[in-house]
Image (tube, rainbow, N blue to C red):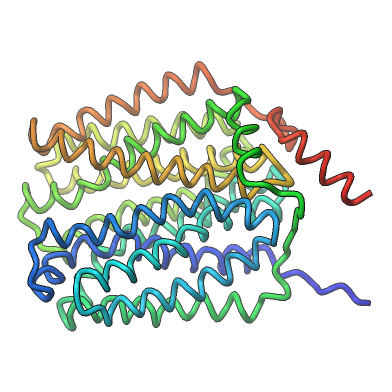
Length: 410
């Protein structure tokens, strides 16, 4: 029997990147249209804010569940099914008649959106050798988080010309593109299965090893301070510069653009100077971005520089930490990457919540000052706790999983 030829690596990055773009864009689109939803459903804005919670809770929980499922049944199988259901659920949001129905459809969207980023990380880890992996992951993350930068502008434009229901309909239609591409190339996408994969044991094994634990701790700090501060960039522009949602979205796109550009070079830099130096540079850039906004954000040109630095710092930091995590468990890579996504998104939510309290108590500038300082502390901790990995021989591979898989293949 002739073996099915695998899809090209650049095509794989494009397929996964477009899927990631839509999921990340959908993750952020409710914020700018929340007032419109509240007015249409005749509820208060704080009540409408429950829609964000309805999405985020299943999004966080199911990231932990989908990783072991992908290890056991195949990554391309899980991600393709999830994109189909994500597209359907996004479209259904447009037909909700009240808070309960819209909330139910947003929860369903969150369930299936949860699998796309971590399983894409794992699939890229399966498909690229370590020396090429950070470049591939950086490109994928850059494309995906361009969706975060563009989401507010996209939502604002669509809502302005149509209404909030039109936003979900347009997102569903656009999501058909990566979904159809995944289905078309399904047989050519590589896939590994580990029938011995379990849910709890691999997570315990990962967290019991100091090298793994320190990496996940760094991801928690990154999510808390980088995503926590980015979340209030739009609020800063609205409060200080009195920008409308469209203007805010256009300015905040600088984060996504720098993520894409940085993703194109971070792998080459890692091969040239070492991944830890790229990580440290990323944390330094992100800290500088926050502190520039704190000190000179009233100057819109300097604010744009600050948000661009934050985007560059994010891609250097996140791509390095994700690349490290792909080496933790070859046969349970989906599990390892789901823990990355859970730590990152969970800490981003916590950082955003804490940031809101800081702003309420100490003013809009405070979150950028405190989180910028926090990133400097994270930089120091990474210098002390993390060491350079060598090739694919990460010391915290899941020995029991590897052994079970080898026995299965024997």
